[in-house]
Length: 212
Length: 135
Image (cartoon, chains in turn red, yellow):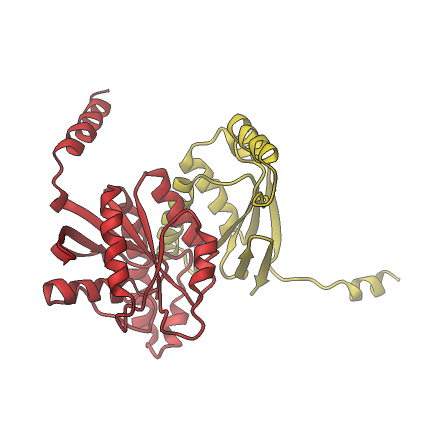
């Protein structure tokens, strides 16, 4: 009972007094969609530093990475938030897949172990987010259960969502397919690697922050 | 004759399906449901659940799967897919009927397929069809 009251008052008063600069915006999605590439692009643009390393080998990000106080100034508006980059969520991890990228068995097994823990950590962080950017690879089929599970969990927690359809610089990219898979959400096509459409992304990010 | 028949039958090694009716899991807690599913999957079975898991149950299923990948030898995770009736071009009346039924008896118009990743290589899913690619 006491716990319930505490939770209720935290929600009411937390909502009243939460400053907009304490926002926590998470980056979620499947592995290799470009979450860290996009997080790096934003951090580099506005703080001058990267947040993490990127790689072609899946599950390069295996810990939640945080950049405090990212301040974006765009068209006279300012948005300050805590950027939280999370490991890619998957339902399976096979160390042998990492060996195909040239990793030795021992290193591949270590990476797999860290990746499983990273996925658990990413899911546990869901409750702490104020808004989430779902980063999807626009060259891949969007109808994957992982994507649906992530979105379903955010909807259940009433967390506002923006979908970034990444890798539009690639020939196979199909942003329309993502739009038709998730028609209820704003989808913005970008290339985090080449910085394509990034202004449109920032515009959408400001719109997202208004939904919090 | 019997030998001839036996010769004609192709056995798929390690493939076993288990259908779970909605009523069997209805009264279980999240932890119990997930435990039941994972114990079958660990026994190399493809589970066909009548109904669908809630979003938080799916997240819990992934969390517990990852904990098992870390601890159970040769377990590499799961493949998971939900098949739902396609209501996009249906009339408002049909959509309402589904909505009311969903509220009254839970979402058991869907089918959830969960199997070991080593048995199911991939579940190809689009709104109209679902294919299990066996490993």
